[in-house]
Image (cartoon, rainbow, N blue to C red; front, side, top):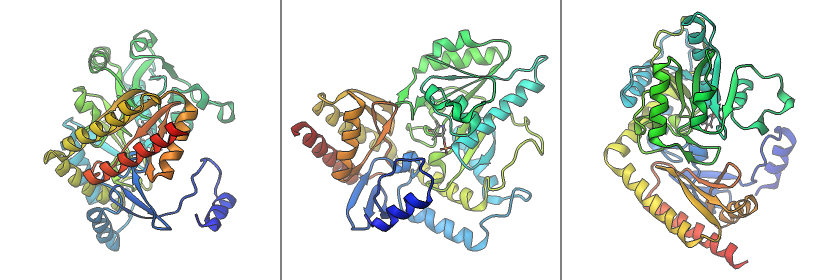
Length: 399
Ligand SMILES: *Cc1c(COP(=O)(O)O)cnc(C)c1O
């Protein structure tokens, strides 16, 4: 890699990530090329963001056409693609919702919590403000969403004090006992992403949803990672056949442009002035998202997505079965997949060796190898990527 870029990065960018120093120059669907034209099969899609692949021409053309006219005008004026995107989201999820557009997952969750807090303030005699979350969850990096995240290692004293009203619990069953008369909402992922690609049981979730509805407690589903067809349906909530009060989206929605969304059935919860965002839902990002959704709707309706999911999981399962000396479990839903690795050191070695063999994979939790390919990944790319992964694992076995 161009040494100079590494030096500049280290000198001028805050060190919040332990970066890989590779300089990607070009991407075509699920294939990336570095500055030496070496190609990599991308099983990460920028952490579930590049849902329609890299260098998507349809999205690029729409963005170009839009920004030649207007990129941004602020939310003080109506924004045509934003209005259309909100309508589209309602149609695709099938719930009776309105949407607020934010710029990231954390920001969407932050807004969801504001909705819950206002609901808790205005709807009951006593203020309800407590939000229950789960262990191994991930909800973002702002002070509030980091506190909502159920990983104590993230609640470091460095950033204290945190906002009150958050508690996290080991499993779905524990939520019932944690509820008191100040509880306003339960916020969960249906497949915990960062926590280790852990899907919850459908029945258990349906029972929880029913209980919460009966008790007037909001159900917030964080679909920042699971949303936008990642699990095979538009929302994981559609797959689980539940009707949440609030759903948040981000990662895959814009195909790479920063966009977040808070969708809620509490259609009149906010009044002008309650919430806002300068950039949220501007022409650039909502135009991109509209095209991303058009593409993905076609991919889904043509049956291509279901075929890709089946093929990807078949190939992944072969790898899993061939390398039980490394892998202990095969987990996930749709194109959100994980293989549990026997220990964290081996996982680090797998990711590094895979990279050297030209395939990009991710880590989740302590010991999960995570795969989040573009939803448009081709059969050739899957074949090539799994061949390279197999070679990497063989190499590890030999050493
Ligand atoms: C990535 C993620 C977030 C945070 O999104 P950002 O865009 O990084 O703020 C929140 N929740 C879940 C489930 C995520 O996977």
